[in-house]
Length: 304
Image 1 (cartoon, rainbow, N blue to C red):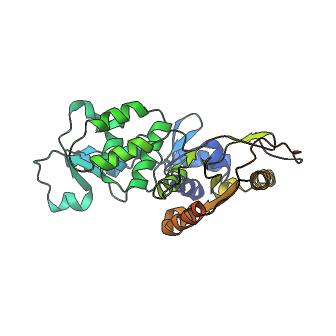
Image 2 (image 1 turned 180 degrees about the vertical axis):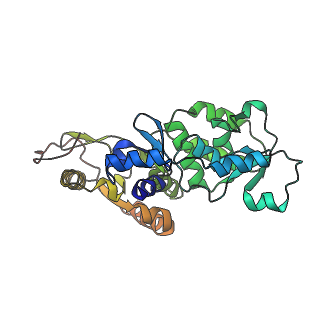
Image 3 (image 1 turned 90 degrees about the vertical axis):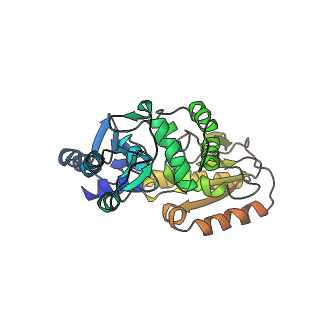
């Protein structure tokens, strides 16, 4: 059962049934749901529960669940789940030492339309995170909100255009780069790192044609001829997946693409090194990728 929770934590708090089956049996997944360590939000979609402590603490403080705690409650994937409940209280409210120890407190005057079921609504949650979190974490939240269709990109940009005060500039940057195509926080954080590399513009889930087959790498910069893959060990646990992965890599390289692959641990814990690799890759020159060249597909080749 711990394996299910660990995988959800690694994926930012949400996962599909298929993703969980890569690391745990169907029986283990069902058990996790029965004991309450995992919630089944809808068919094939699972998430970590918003702890009872979060709701209790917010209630005791007459506060609103907000920021990353609200994002978890909305079922979005995060780079890091909050270690303490995150709540918002009115600007003039005094919060004593017990409250400050129990929760991460933010001060803001929320309107009734900002709150639903004791937590900030999806749009307000994205904006709060965009203004206060580090850029990579904020981008992961926004990507997840767009991917879940709880927030629309145009809606987010319009709301951010009306912001004033601290965090406005970063919120505008998050709104500019947020994308529903990012598959998970791993990819979002990797893209956030790449945005600090001059001359690099990685686009998530852009299809390219190699060996007569359309494949969709994690991140692609067409002008730089660069493909960047976010490699998770959970996606390479079967023989067929390994065959497909090797085929993709070899055909991309032969077609002229430069391919970089990063692990979850490297992206999350060694962002400086990841950025240095991307900087060096941008500094290299190469011929344009041969995206239309056809070659024979191997047995057990790629899923197109």
